[in-house]
Image 1 (tube, rainbow, N blue to C red):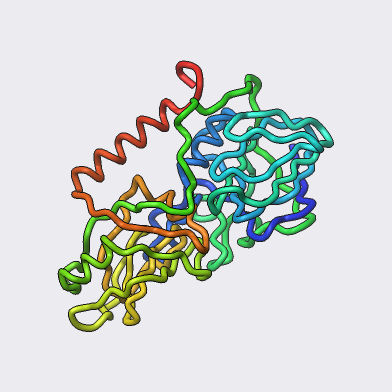
Image 2: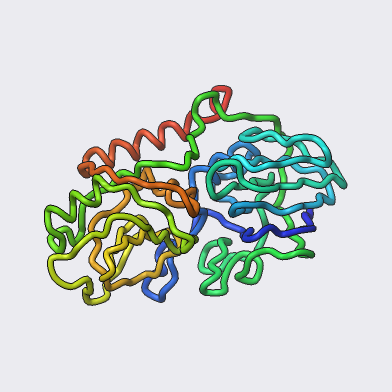
Length: 313
């Protein structure tokens, strides 16, 4: 089955769950900025959780379907219609042959995900179909989609049906959020007052916000000494503090090495919140211990496993 992009939206890319293991050659794991939403979209349409879908930022594309397809929209709620009828959110629905799915602007967070039955069949590059725009690889020739692109799906088995996310399990994509962090790894590079600044201040997401990371505006965080380190490996969720004291939260397409001291690291269970933060949103930080972070991750995985209506969904 083939999808044709009639209009692409400002930044629409093919994403799966990423390509871990290539940091030594400068390629981040990448993948969906809101991985739980991609996993749920795929489960809604009967795909493996890691199948490739479309990730849309702030506004979405218009897509024509050459054959009927089961699809699902998850993540932030965007304005969406099939021809002239409203498209449901977090529910698998059928788009018929010749119909057009129009995805407009966001109503909540930064990103939405479109899952399509069969997954998007673009070439594997370093083990993933995800688009890494800075490196020009993966997805559709390593770039965002544009008008006229055609995407095929993989093999489709019979048995698709309407599925929905259980009531009450969808997160809130609010303009204010608390990111839970583990302090460090360079916590000794900052005074106690600097740590307090991070954990009591409110930060605004600047216009310099993308899949690489979020540059924040707010109370400045002061180092004990200099801001610079010898370059070292860095991870998504790391909070770097350059010399100007304005923190940078690293996103899924972060550089694989960096030389700024990191005051804290966002826990795995909250990484999706980085992907859903948009310019103007306000963020605060709360410290947790490693044991609590692990428990929160396990709880998130339990919720994902039980997210769909119907036993065994």
